[in-house]
Image 1 (tube, rainbow, N blue to C red):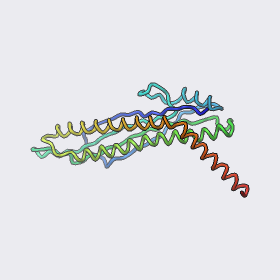
Image 2 (image 1 turned 180 degrees about the vertical axis):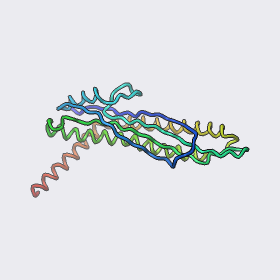
Image 3 (image 1 turned 45 degrees about the vertical axis):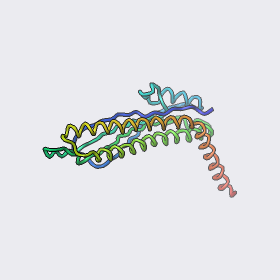
Image 4 (image 1 turned 90 degrees about the horizontal axis):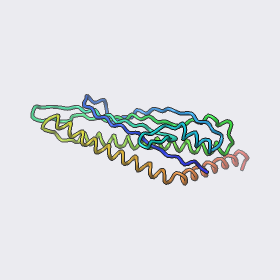
Length: 210
């Protein structure tokens, strides 16, 4: 039986007023945690025991993505009104993935399932980053579209309101993505396994001159 896994994203939103440093950008890093186990059941237990702890769910998960937004704003104050002349939003993402130590000691079927599962975990976490990046662009465009205000304090307050709205939409998009992925998990893994097995059989047939 395939292990049931869950995924999660940790979110931190920061808003600061300073000189901008370029357009929406992404800084992505990876870290890994090691797991043992020779069977699927043992691997599932290892993931539950050693996976990253996600505060929003209170559980450990086989993978996680921590996302931090930083907004930088530049103001122009004419004395009569204040305008946001520049705005940039950057995303800092840290992806946490499993690394299986017992591959060489396990059978071919378990290795095949693990390769399929681990690839799906990475794809899932990378998708969280795409969602964050898209909302960073949305936020940047929205901030650049703020009309001039009577004061820079009002401009900053307007920027804060817009940021909170876009980040709330981001949170909902991430949660919806996890919900859909969770519902389709088993059918997706079975489909991927079937595809990988077909490719292996095709490669064997070609090697044998078939």
